[in-house]
Image (cartoon, rainbow, N blue to C red):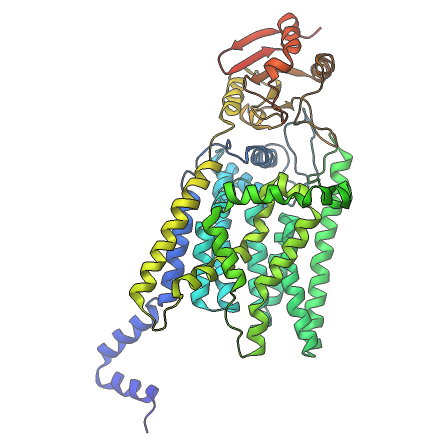
Length: 542
């Protein structure tokens, strides 16, 4: 009997040209699964790069402009990545305790090469988002199968929350991309892959957790698979993973210890993050029902919408059939382990996460996997004899419903330029500022540094913030506000600007609540702009 390889060699001797052509095409042709993955990546890119040049004036403006300031200061003042610095607390140095600045540092490098463009940070974040799509696809294929991988990756590509966060100048896209890649590489190593996968997985996961602490939740998957090895008495492999994990945790702990020290050592003594259960107390969280009402409202009106929520719930409730092989059964539990760990992080930091909803991003890997599973359940429901026309028709209907009732309207809502007048104020301040001038600015949302950022100078938000100071609402009386303004003048403030629609979190308009401050500026300063939208003074020194 002649095997296939012998037959191929015999054909090559008889018809060398035909044999060469056929084998060349076979080697270079793209498999259907690869083609589908590339198509999903293109779809994800279209949604993430659409409107990529939008200024930093959307719903996440506050956090985005702080991140953008750190990129500015790396490029303009100090390239040391361990000293992240903002520009909204005066002349500086304004070092703060922040995450490891991967996105802002890469953006600063782009500034150095191509010049300053405010959308470069969005572009870097979007590229990390595509990495998440790819690594999520490969992780899902490893845990379940290729069909589920396609559905999960497509679900992530179209999910409004993922699109919004992945196209925002935030550290979270880097976090999710790197921890997902790390978990995928580790799962591949656990399933029998090469030994070099372990150090790669450790490095990727560690960088992801450094980029944003919620990424540590994904480490529960690695711990779970290590525990499976211990149960199987594979102690040598488990020990290797345990030591890698200790090294990773040591690096992460060392960096965040440094970040806390840095934030407590320089004015305004600000360490990013607050609202943890150990700060507020368990009973505060309990009385607020762990802020689940906020979670529901964010989920329905911003991040997912009812179609995606239904698919996620269905996929969670109806997992794939248990595999016969023990190793595959262990891997199939990965999204559940990840979700449980993410919920634990939420319960510990509910007020912080609900106040800054981009922190939900760590949930989006298991959510996408359950979303893909839910879609497949609906696509194949009650189809005894597999029918491609019915599958295609149902898939088109599901995609249409999610796009029309979730993706398009919710992304549009989140991308509404709510801080555009803050940008206009900043540009007006930039036009009026002389070299070395410091500005004081009140954006439409009090505390948002967007106006300081677009002034291309340094200065203060008003009321001045940082540390434990509440700077998202005005002080109670004009006398205190005037004293704050005089203190900033003594520190070197030259220009004062406010958007006339500026309001604090209690919905008090600056021009109404602090009309006494405006009278004070009329008497002591020089009014430069008084338009329908803006009010700008040059501060006169005594």
